[in-house]
Amino acid sequence: MIQNPILKGFCPDPSIIRAGEDYYIATSTFEWWPGVRLFHSKDLQHWEQIPSPLRRESQLNLVGDPASGGVWAPCLSYDGERFFLLYTDVKTKKGRYYNTHNYLIHTADIHGEWSEPVYLNSIGFDPSLFHDTNGKKYLINMVNGFKGVLAQELDENFKPVGEQRKIYSGTELGYTEGPHMYHIGKWYYLIVAEGGTGYEHCVTMARSESLWGPYETAPNNPILTSDQNDAHALQKCGHADLVETSEGEWYMVHLCSRPLNGEKWCTLGRETAIQKMIWDQEGWIHLKSGGRYAGLTAETPTGLSEVPLEDEENGFYDDFDSKILHVRYSSPRADYSLFADCTARPGYLRLRGQESLNSLHHVSLLAVRQQRISCTAQTELEFEPRSPEQLAGLCYMYDAMNFYILGKTVNEEGGAILTLIKSDDGVITDEMEPVPVPAAGAVGLRVEVSEDGTQAVFSYHVENENWRRAGDSLTTKILTDEHCRGFTGACFGLYAHDMMGMAATADFEYFCVETREGERP
Image: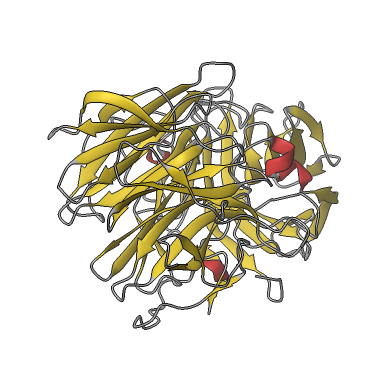
């Protein structure tokens, strides 16, 4: 059996394809660089991350984008020769008129470089590309304000041409978004996310004998949602995509969340799960397990042998011996190569301090997403600050307004100290009395997340001393989707800022995130 979620921690809005015997999933990254996470699998249950497609500023400029803005709901597709990716860059997400710019890129090698973007429109978000059986390509687009789904043909240069027509208005569930279209047999099938991306989230299906409609909604709608009465069930299930295996079996990948201990706290954000599907005699698709609630497990595909890949779920360790940073790293809004370097001091990561973490522009933070409810992140830092406006350390954060930092700085008298700060919706407080530390030499920094995921404890050590606790136990609630009203997830990161001259550097000897055994899937 496949255990859900298949992509743990901050991997929402999945789009899936099969290319021969290979499967690929693209997920949203929002304000994090590089844009869009890509994952590869041979068996639909073991997944490894491969290089992101949006790695050049000419493809994506996120500087200034709001928290949980940026790249929304990518659509990955394949026409047998080329891979295509549609994505939205959300510049504003408040008021009547969102600024949502939609683009298309393509490549012949999904592991290689992708093209420069083709601008499509800014009328809504979550665009998808539909490859019809006659070779034509269509842009499937929701409308800002959740006013329905549009279709428009694309020309040979992938530019919209001809009439743009509304083909589906959605159902009474509302918040119609995330459209994907499929031509199977005589039917054009449309699946959309509805109910909002919270606990009422679901998947709606409709069909028509013409691409242009009219579309009939599935009689058993929604075809997928969550059992909100079961504290251990996957929640927020919706925003789905379908794939057919080489054996003719069908699977649906979808967004989900795992609240902590029955509380509506999701530190891991929105994740990706998979369900096995079957078609009925009337030509509608259903969960093979029955009903409409997403399952914690799914049947393994027929004819596909298990192919274990790099298992990123069981922890992460980087000793910075490679000159190239690991594919799992992300940074807020800007390319981390602008401030992170593994060559200046071999065996160390060097960060050049820039703006503080609450900036929406140039922040020196190198992070990995939290993937287990209970885990420990740890590093060793060498940093010699000269001003209280310089700080470097270990960060546990959700976004620019909500985070914890255990870092080294100096006090007003110039003495080196450790400080633990919290930012709760932008209100910054000190969570312990400053701790004097040596001006030079290494300082170990650690954060441990409790077994139930609700508490975080920071600690430190200097030279050969034992670990010492830093401050009291701290709530993780401020790092949840619900508290932050966001769409991402908690991350652990290495951080530095320098408000004096944006040139002070901090060296990190290693970075590891260890998971704990025994937690529920």
